[in-house]
Image (cartoon, rainbow, N blue to C red; front, side, top):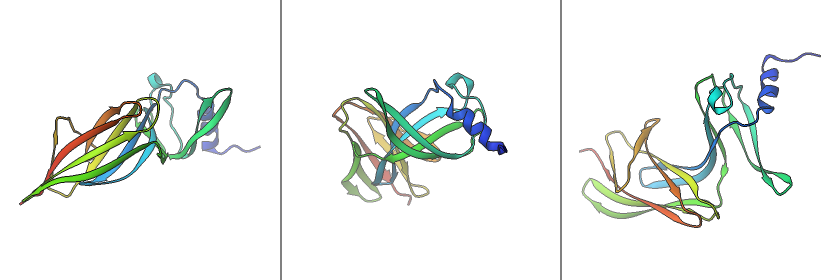
Amino acid sequence: MTVAANAQKQVALAQKTGVKMQALYRAEMWEDSVGEVRQMLRTRNRKEEGLGLPLPGGPVAVFEPMGSAMLLAGEGGLEDRAVGEDVEILLSDSTQVTAAVEELERKGRARTARLTATNARPVPVSFEARIASSPGTQIRAKGAKLTRKDGRDTWAVTIPANGTATLTYTLTDPE
């Protein structure tokens, strides 16, 4: 019997239990428009998180318990990850967590928009919106903090069970 180099690692990974993962929902945005919200899992490839070994790329299936059965919660993919790197697994589009943007005002080079994220689940969920923009365009949030991640302004929030969260922000184009 022959075992390919990556096959042994994949078997070892499949047997990992107790890996600490953050479940969240992410919307990718372009200025004042929003795409589909996707389910995702995030962790760091470290022993403290239950990993700490080189991770080979490949398909990922996520299951969650439902009574005495395990139901498929989503499928995604994983790129090769070295020890210490962040790991993000994008799963399917969400039907229970959604996002919409409406333009509120336009004045000269500035336009103000409102992002509304809605959670139809019976539990609170973590949500993030990553806002991409043209070079030189400034984004300022009203009453919320944006962080910069992977070259994008990012809003992170917990949406309450069966509730909504809103972000009002202004985009100012360069002169």
